[in-house]
Image (tube, rainbow over all chains, first blue to last red; front, side, top):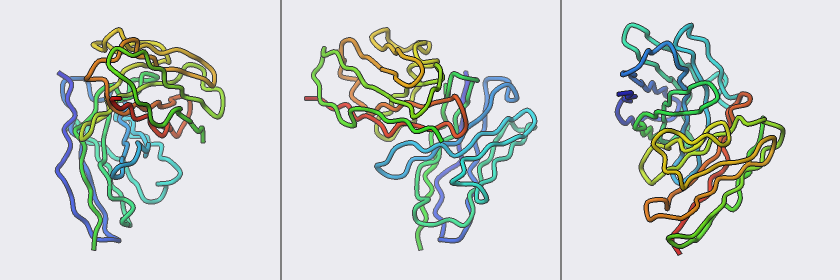
Length: 118
Length: 107
């Protein structure tokens, strides 16, 4: 069965970076894009960007340009999202989701809580 | 960026009620719209894609309609497990923006 398993919670200080992983299984990794979405406490969903695991191409939301990097490792079917220069407003649950063309996110990871606090 | 505006933001309803949530796009997105349900502490769940196609395994009481700039999600007969927050998302162009959400509460 399709699964996306994310890495565990993180606590970071302002100015630091965080790297969240998302390991895919149960399907052909390179056939589906992965997008990253975050949700601040009590807030809505915010789209961060998308990666094509086949070639590694990425598209990021303008808001995160220069601070976010999405990569993939095809040997382990894992995608990574690194966010740098963290500030308190980056405290959120970060989700990865498999995207099938115009379908949207049909399978989601369990979420990773990133807390930014001094 | 394409803005999505959901209405209402909060909705109070009873079991067996019929409810409709609207999502308006700031520009034409054809039928590239998905609807999600999210419960507290859980990841979103895909309900509808391509504006009106029911995702596999989703109960038939959920339906979607619309194209262009106006879309609706309808739940024909609310069940206790349907009380949650609902989001629309456009997949027409990057960034793939979400609506602000509609919280559906028990009356």
